[in-house]
Length: 343
Ligand SMILES: C[S@@+](CC[C@H](N)C(=O)[O-])C[C@H]1O[C@@H](n2cnc3c(N)ncnc32)[C@H](O)[C@@H]1O
Figure 1 (tube, helix red, strand yellow):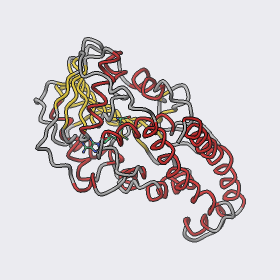
Figure 2 (cartoon, helix red, strand yellow):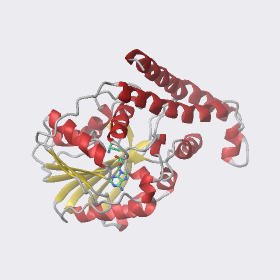
Figure 3 (cartoon, rainbow, N blue to C red):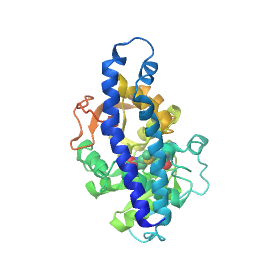
C-alpha cells in the first residue's frame, strides 16, 4: 500500500470514529431520553430497541477493527523504521523465563490482532493506534502529561514505579516531572518494553524498564514513594487487581502514594450501559467487573488509607476535585483517578 493510501485509510477511520462519538452517541442519547428512560423493564432491552442503537453498536466495533487494520498497514508499509537506539540512559531488564498468564494472552485486548505483546510489529502498531484512538488530540501525549501535572503531588520521590507502562508514554512524563527520582516502568510485554527503552534513549530519559507481572514485580519492599498505573487496571481480572494493590503496598514506604488512572461508573445509566457493552464490543472482558467492584475497599484491604476516586477530564483540567463529571454530550470515557496513601 502506498503512503497516500494508508494515510487516507487512517483519515477515514478517524473521521468515522469522530462522527460516532460526536453525532451518533448524542442521537442515541436523545432517543433514550425521549422514550427508553421512561419505560420500565430491562435497561439493555429498552436501549437495544432504539432506532440508532444497531448502527451505534456495530460502528463501535467495526471502526475499532478498521483502526487496527489501517494502523497495521501503515506500520507494515513504512520502510524499515529506524529501530531507535539501545544506547542511552534507559535500561531494559527482560525475563526470558517469564510465563505470560493465560488470561493475558487468550484475549486480543482492544481487538488488536495478536495483542500488544506478540511481536515487535504488534508493539509498533499499538504505539500508532494509541495516538490515533484519541482522535488527533494526543499527538504529543497530552493525556499523560495532564495526569502527571494534575494528579501527582509535587514531592521529592526517591523511587517511582509505573505499573503496566506499555511502550513508555505514561512513564516519560513522570521522569520529566521528577528528574531526580529513580523511575521504573513494569510491563509483561517484552516488545513494548524494548520500544519504551529505545524511545526513552532518544528522549534522553534515564528510565529503568523491567519485564514482570504488576502483581509480582520482584522489586525491593518499601523503597518506592509513588506507584502509578494508567489504563492498566481495567485489563486485570479482579483477583490480579487485588494482588496488584497488595504488591503496590509492599513496594511503598509508609506514607507513599498510589495514583491509578482508569474508569469509574458515572451514574448516567445510558453511559454506564454503553461502557459495560464497550467491554464486550472492544474485547475488554475484565473492564465491566472492575467498574462494578468496590476497588476503594480493595485498596483499603491491601493497606491503603485516604482512598478515593476523583474524576479526570482529559480535555484540559485533568484531575477534578470529586467524582463529578462535567456535562458532555459527546461519547467520552469516564476517566477517573484512584488516590490513596500507604498507611
Ligand atoms: C492499555 S496499556 C497502558 C499502557 C500505559 N500505562 C499507558 O497509559 O499508555 C496496558 C498495559 O498493561 C500491560 N499489562 C497488562 N497486564 C499486566 C500485568 N499483569 N502486569 C504488567 N503489565 C500488564 C499491557 O501489556 C499493556 O502494555
